[in-house]
Image (cartoon, rainbow, N blue to C red):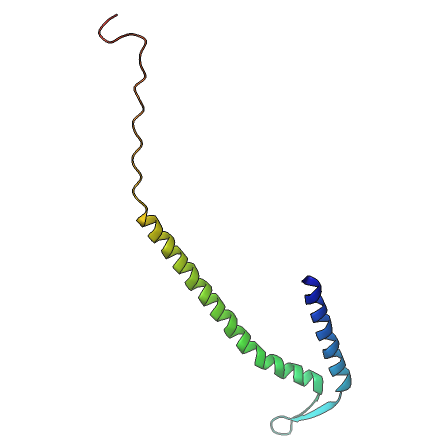
Length: 107
């Protein structure tokens, strides 16, 4: 399974490298006032992709964290209820009297 994961990441890296190589052009961005920025197209696309991915990724991690907390809380509640429903353990019986070597009432 690790081999397939490595192969997938390698193929993804090759595709991204080919995309960058094929689209290495400069794009002129008109910012505010008379400010103009010349940015390489692959850099611009990667930046916009990450700008869209990060909020959703943070939201996903927050939801997973919250669900994990709720699951742990429910598991603790179930464990507490199971502990409360167990029958009370009987107290241990007192140890049996050890017979003495001397019979009672006589010496």
